[in-house]
Length: 253
Image (spheres, rainbow, N blue to C red):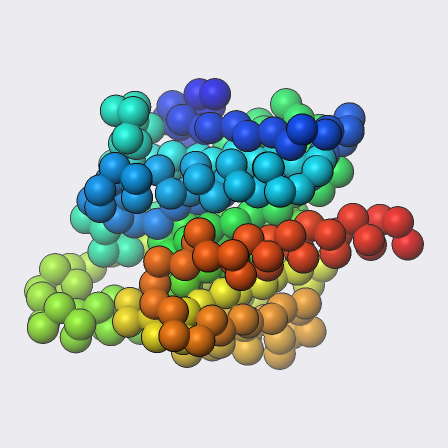
């Protein structure tokens, strides 16, 4: 499915549960910054996550969006500028394009609830959507999140032995800066590897603390011994399952 949003054609791969109602739960999945840099199996990892979610749960429409400028293993590419994978493409233009694509997905599938799920840079964009478009989603799963953009870019510069590319100014939005605008009604779950060298647990904890201080429904799950690439871990899919079931239970009450 190709969606036109903010003047960009964005590829969106749709996965459906075997059992669907007229008003399913819509899950929108975003990949991280380094899509396509790894081997071919890695380059479609958010498709794999979306497929697993649709297979495991009933009543889901799972839409895996290929972020602006990115190319998948089929050679198809969303329009736009992917940037340098330095946190430089979490801009208002990109965030608004994803939000607009979500709106079109809602009009197509008429969901009872909308859930956002993203890994790494995709999680950061989700945080930006929650702050910039407070009514866009009912819940969010943020995995391996660089939620404090300035702190993360400084951390990555240290990890890469002072690489000057991390000092180049960017126009990206930081989830932490937008945390006070997140709707208190949104359920936010963060999952992070205990040994994540790229987006350490403290970044997820700091964002959660900011939301928690406002009374938001938020929790952090730290997976002991695991690092950054945890989207396909069973515990991550389990966190999404619990999030969806929680929304369904709320409706039943």
